[in-house]
Image (tube, rainbow, N blue to C red; front, top):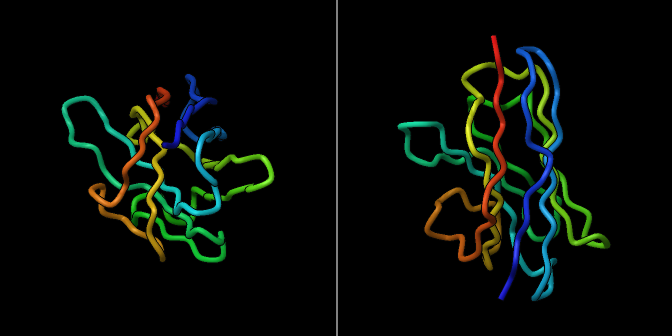
Length: 124
């Protein structure tokens, strides 16, 4: 069992930056690939970014590539999402998730454990 708690969401203006954190507890953190997903109002949840179990490889959705950076600190059992040059279309509830899988999975079905989400709102 893995428990995930996101934090760092808030209200920012377009062009601003924001950092999200996801603290994990329970099973060994390093056994899991970690991902970030988001869900905007009226939309389905979509993939944002993921990092492998080792943290050596990462993947990003085209919509955030070059603006967002995912990282992990296994000593702190925490995964981060650094978001820069935020746009109004980035407004969503952001979720972190854990997958007992190799590589950099982007399929939501691969992720067994999910956090409760943190709201990010970007005003124009």
